[in-house]
Image (cartoon, rainbow, N blue to C red; front, side):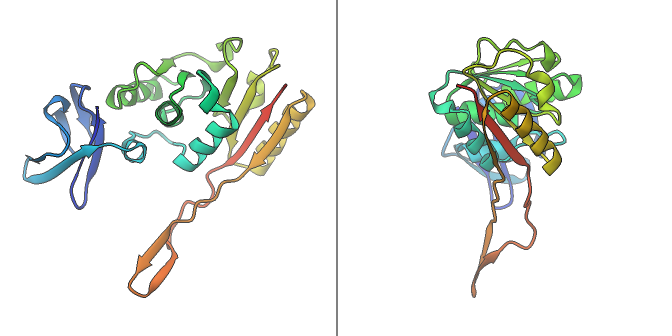
Length: 234
């Protein structure tokens, strides 16, 4: 079971079947001791526990240099038709934010290629921590070695996604998230030349701050997270 322990200033999410794990801010903890709807102490701090939401998982993911946000994950999942897909291929798994959140939101089985050994270890820790071993299958190899034939949905988190798409892509849905206009345009034109129906989106999320006198946008926000380029080849 995924649980979140929290107080007024802290929040940590993990599976209570993960056993002994290290959680930044808590140290080494035996997760099996926790059940929902309890009050308990860790050192001098008092916590409550509850069943976790997917947002709790996102906020507790141990991150590498970059992590996809829920707004991007959910929209990419719809573009790839993940609600009607059993399997997803991911190239560029990173710390696991896209594959872990997609598996929890859409109940899809994800095979994810991550070539960097240190990032791969972080990815595996997150898989264990959030109890998705039966849904997310990490591969510590170059995504160029991925076999596309068994997958109808492909997500590529790499600044040059076109270099992975040299096989027959008929019937495939493909998506990538890219930081710059030039990369988004290059990938869009690449997909168009291959016969894909292409869409490009930028998803903007502006959180609001509520005060006694009214509501206004937060002072500091993450405005741009990337351009989502997607295509389907019928």
